[in-house]
Image (cartoon, rainbow, N blue to C red; front, side, top):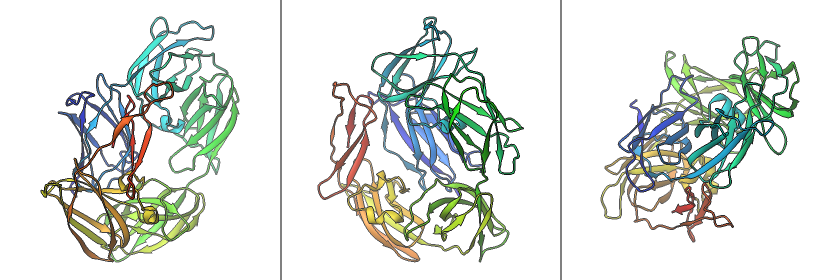
Length: 499
């Protein structure tokens, strides 16, 4: 199958083309599955290329000189080449601060790192989040970050030389300077991570976050071959410990004091689900995507992100299943997705889900035109089946569980391998208002939607400010058309928004 490419045009705050964009991406599927996501940034275009059977990109960070970086989470990969709406960067705000030691003395040459304030300790420990920026304190302990989004960010200093790691979890760019007070370290907090049989879990990641209403210190460590870890850059206090390793259920210790030695962390092995494919050659080797679903109800909500494995010799093993009652959504290239029955899964055990036969599913075809009657390219979105009861006056593109496909430049849309049932599809193109349609997908064959004409788009814009009058960036603004759909946008660093 030919790879799909998502293209994102980018502009500077003045609307000029950006030619020096740096793009960093993260996907949990890059290493274990052999999938590769190529990021190319030039001529004001960011192009991301991935195999068609690829889940959403977990994280994309875009930056360029003189502008505020932008972070995207769960960027969708449509089943075809498409161009996402043009992105204009904001100039951003300035964050100034000072690093001081236990006696309030300035600390020079200390590395300060900015993270998204919503990232978790395990996100940062396992690389599932990327630093927004880094700086080094000067001789007076001062540091400065320019072009930061006018929002809450997280500042971290890695400990060392007898000093603890320091955190300012809620630093606000554009306001008063911040102060990072570094304190002396306690004796190391040590322990061992083992499985249910007492065997060490080498490579497990342990993250310590200071407990309490104000987080002032954190540290992350990787276990050695004996499963041992040492956190030797912690200030005095109580910490929440989180341990994680592939194939195991994460473990949390809500309260452990600095300096405690020999803390045992037992990780329960995750469950395994086994499926068998019938009616296909036994030597078939297929990539497969799966995710857990709510085990109750006829239309089940997704409860986990897509995971990757392979279907070999008619069987597939879904590893890393959290214990509990789950159903599964299974996706294989060239076939309609299907859902399994809900079963209870126990830690460390393999449960047989049953045998399944792939079905071809239904296809959607359509021809999309703009206000002038000419063919136009764009994007199509499909709401998840379980969302049908909630689709009254909702914007499909804003739903967390929607899927996307590309509308080609000649206006043609083809969407294959769809399961039957009622669905809601939406169409979007540059300069046009979204068009939403309720459809009924048959068991098989092709559903021809004919020619779909999009109307010219209007706009609504404004500025969001704090009570003090300071513009509020990264705020969510919702608009609801009377008798129509709901729309959602996020304000830029200067508080502006536009529908």
